[in-house]
Length: 116
Ligand SMILES: [Zn+2]
Ligand SMILES: [Zn+2]
View 1 (cartoon, rainbow, N blue to C red):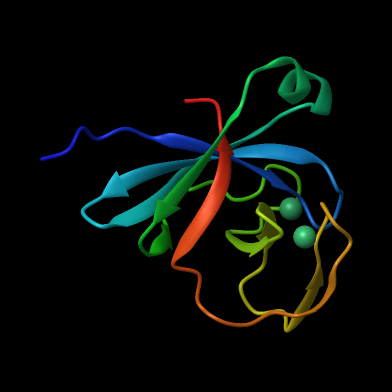
View 2: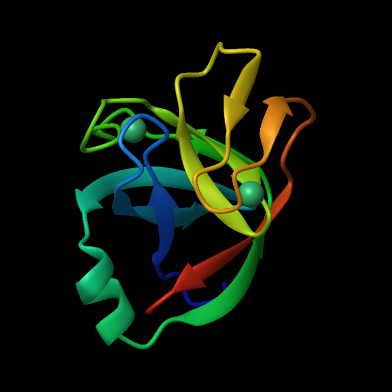
């Protein structure tokens, strides 16, 4: 079995534009979101983050607290970044590149920015 370790993905809240971290833990071939915590832009800029691709299916863990700013329990992926997502809106706006439009498709791999 491969070494199991969690990764932290950087995400932004679609309601506030604020930054937070999502912890993903591997479970078999899937990834479970287990924790989210607020991050300041300053703190994130001061640390070294690596780009990393994780693939599989992504699930929200039962204990996952949701976006620390608005409580959204899901994410959508755009331009190599994560945004919080309520799980049912048809459209949204990416807080990283300002893309706005219809959400669709399944995510089976994401490039995340991780400091682990
Ligand atoms: Zn949010
Ligand atoms: Zn984007």
